[in-house]
Image (cartoon, rainbow, N blue to C red; front, top):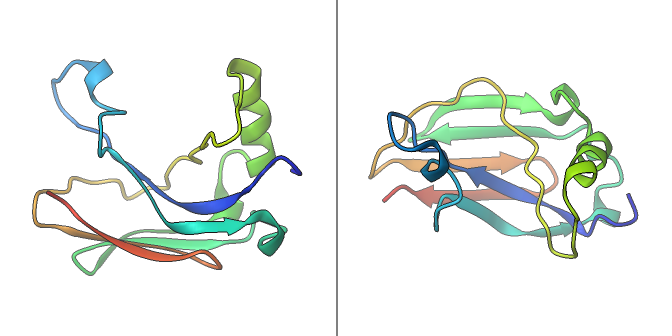
Amino acid sequence: MEHVAGYTIGLDMTVRGAEERSMRKSIDSYSVLGPWLVTADEIPDPSQLDFELKIDGITRQKANTRDLVLSVPELIEMASRFYTLEVGDVIFTGTPEGVGQVVPGNTMHAWIDRIGSMEVLVV
């Protein structure tokens, strides 16, 4: 884990529906990171962090990183089997149940213990 610079909040948006699959992710503004990077030395064990996502004040997701299918070290190991990881690369952990549609005007509030929170207005 000495290669991990730190941790942040990441919202990875996906278009749902009949659109071409390759256009559902990775378009400009589909992934939001922030509000800052908390250095790895401040979070020696990333496997015990509560997190929550609210849409317009209603909780949609609430979980703990201990419930991830793969731990953070396992995610890094798996990703490095298929990709050359470079300084500055970001790995998203996946999402718990509660994924749902957002529409323009919604406010997304994301929070992770020891990292902080951020609000994003959907446009």
